[in-house]
Length: 97
Image (cartoon, rainbow, N blue to C red):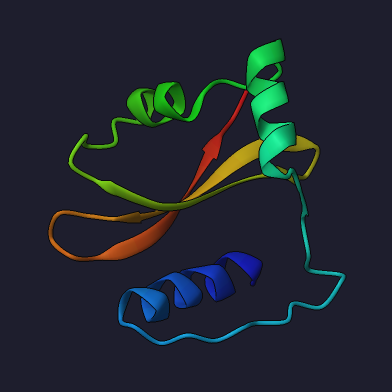
């Protein structure tokens, strides 16, 4: 459900609609802030975004719109909003470790 809300938010923001979305606490994921992400990459706890995207085979012409690192069921994942060259927007959930 949370990924669906985020995908909708990405799509609407790409179309120029601005809104905020409140997700119930039960659906919220524990996500790292940007400093925690940098520290996790530096310490080797997670791979860099570039390495994760490359290993997932994401085309280099894909535009990254936003990035989160969240705990999903005890594992850290990147949730990456991307805009594909064809104009489609979607969220990728990729293993960060």
